[in-house]
Every structure is written in structure tokens, then in C-alpha cells.
Image (tube, rainbow, N blue to C red; front, side, top):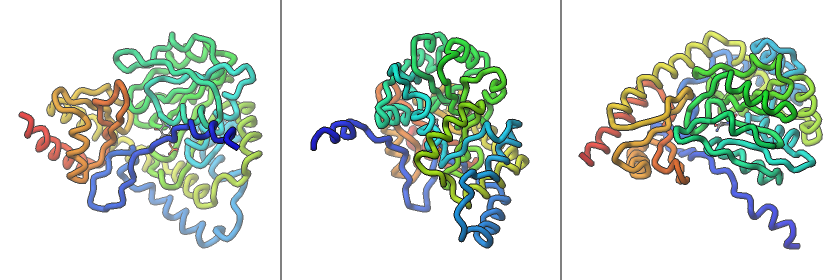
Length: 356
Ligand code: PMP
């Protein structure tokens, strides 16, 4: 009976940031959007509750798929939706990275810490590719033999983005492998690889409604790629569960993606707050890679990150601390509202002042 246990016991589960229950806090630890979703989302919820909540959801999630296809100028058969981009990426690991030759999937070290967990869970061989000393992804490192590639752009938790030319280099060097660009944070100032899809059949772009569309709680993610990749994803998905999205997620997601004006307004506010926050952090003695995401990955010149993390927590201000080699002197700070960030900076002044 012990045989099965060894497989699963070794898996180290993904540890997401804390979701504290208190209400009087400044929550800057899990990269959520500080603004509510579009008012159109609330309307869609009310309509759904009144009319279709009693029915099973549309297994094709057509309303949401159509809204995404329209927004990104692709056809519906190029869109795959799932329960958060975590679900979409998990399906993509199963679909594309389980190659019979057991060649390793490549992803950066440091990057989203869920990739190795999925690889372990699905017993997919993987190899991590170190970032350079400035935390950058180096495209030439992705020329080695592999069974697929995934990387976030912008990367997490560094916030650094690579340009479309660099993505093209990776795609050109790996024409026979599926290359997944995880664009969870792309809307905060990075060019999306969706514009490359016409030229690359091996490209899959994954995005989420959790960040720029303020809907982390609703769990909506999607992938866009060529029709063949999407139909392979569907084959794997449909073998598990054809009712992936619930009817409120379908209607609310479609409403959110159609409200372009609100999306632009709120993402712009976050970008402006981020750029202001960078200046404040510099003035306080922090350094950081030049983030293009809705968070900043910052290290203080003289006070340990863990110490700052703990003292902020005592003041009910939550940021993210990773106790991992190479990044254990960094804090990942989500961009909140300007008021929330001001509270953070006031607290940091107090905390750091004690060390002067
Ligand atoms: N990719 C990256 C790089 C992320 O940071 C996250 C969020 N933690 C996700 C994917 C998953 O987001 P979600 O499942 O909420 O869509």
C-alpha cells in the first residue's frame, strides 16, 4: 500500500499569500486590484441571479469566450477559459508538457512558484533556468533541448518584463515546443504576445481576470493560441469536467471584458501609483527591479526584509515575504490605492526610523 504514497508525499504544495480575515488592514500581499470590478459586473450578477442561476451553465461558456475573442481580435476557437489562470496553466501542463520523451519543461528560477508544483503533481520533468544577476530572463538560456517552456511576462515576483523581440527569439529557437507566456500582469504596461500569434503556432498566451479586472474571487483565466493548441486543451479539459465555469463567472467575466473604459481607467491609476511608489521607496532606502506589474519587489539597503515584514504585520499591513535563497531579502509589495500606499510609507518611515 505504500507505493502510491511516495508519489504524493514528495509534492511540496504551493503556498499562496495569506488571506487574513480582519477588516482593519492594508492588504498588499497577494497582488489583488484595490479597486472594485466594473459596475457592469454587478449588473451582470443581478441579471444572472434573477434569470439563469437555476440552470446548469453553458458548458462552452460561449458568452465569455465571445467577449474575450472580440476584445483580443481573435476567433472563438482560439480561446480557452478556465477557473482562474492557475486552472488554465495546470491544463496546459497536462496537455503540452507531458511529452513521451520526458524532456524537461523549462522555466525561470525565480518565477511563479506554482510551476514546479504542477510539474511535481503531474510528474512532468522540469529544469529551472536561473535569471541573471539583475534578475533578468536571458533568451539564449532557452536554446537548450526541452519539452516546452513557460515564463511569466512580466515575471513574478520581480516585476521585470521582456519585450516582444526577446519572446520571438525564444519562439524561433523552439519551433517544435509549446511556449507559454503567462501574462497575469501584462496589463500594467507590457506588450502582450497575443500580437505574435499569427506567426507562431507554438505560442500560448495565458491571462487572468484576477489582477487588471479586479475579479480574483470569481476565478476566471483564459488562454489564447492557435486553434490546434486550443482544441488539444479542450480534449484534455473535457475529459475531466465539461462544466468548468459557473454561470455567474461567465456573465460577470463577459461584462468586465466589455467595459474597456473602466479597465483603462483603473489600470492607469495603478500604473501611476506604482511609479509614485517607486520614488517613495527610493527615498526610504529601498532598491528594486523596474517593475511593470502591479507590485514592486523591493530590498532595503540596511534593514532585513523579514524584520520589516514582521513589523508591518504588527501594524496590520500585509506584504509578501519569500523565505527562499537569493530573494530572502526582498519584499513583494502590491500596489494598493494611493491612501493605502501612504499608510505603508508612513509605517515604513516609523519602522526604518528606529534603525537610524
Ligand atoms: N501566473 C502568475 C505569474 C501569478 O502571479 C498568478 C497569481 N498568483 C497566476 C498566474 C494565477 O492567477 P489566477 O489563478 O488568479 O488567475
